[in-house]
Length: 288
Image 1 (cartoon, rainbow, N blue to C red):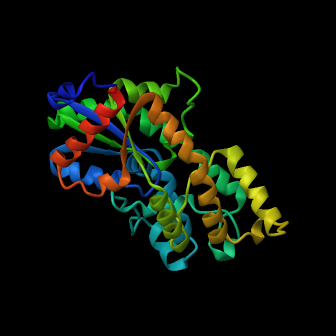
Image 2 (cartoon, rainbow, N blue to C red):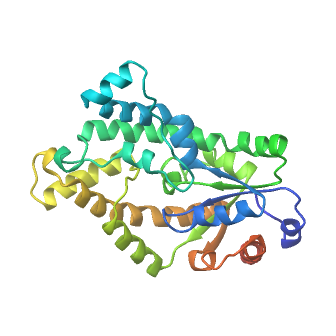
């Protein structure tokens, strides 16, 4: 969805925008600001963690609880109830389930189990993205929201085919929303990498990319056994490789189908008016 001119955007009574970009660049922060100005906030990660992977996550909690005799007895007698308290701002239950491959003694997962959970996430993300059109209509018809912000995960770029003009996810997003890329500067990227090294979090890798980087990491550190890999160290090393692999693909997606604003500009947004000013600049730049 493109706007022919800035007047079309300014005069739109109904508006739906998909924001995308690397993890930590400000997508959820922007969405939270717009939510205060009566925009419906659809979080792909939240949808994944509740609707499409909720049972996997809760079953994992229960599996751990069953290892503790006291909790096992309460659980099997239906005396306690275990659930996931996932929110827009706290996706820790999803992150914990996805985990990181490597030494179980250091909190890692066996590679086979990690790949299984990665595939579950891939399927769940596709379903959640396909749900976008449904939620736009639901927001309008049920809650009377006229403005809609689709807050995607950093791995959006991993589940689409940029070279396929008939890619189903791209068609759904472009036919129902305007795509907006939040582009980080070199400094933003440096800070993100440093932040990740201090507090690694699980990521989604394309299967072939994961296998390639897994082998490279083991060779680099002369590791033969998968279970000897330090999960935290691999997470940091793999994240940087994944980030630089994604950045040019984010840019191509934006150049083909959307608009671009800078992460530094997003950091200055206080309300809907500030956001609209940035959108107007992005539309002008695209149309010129």
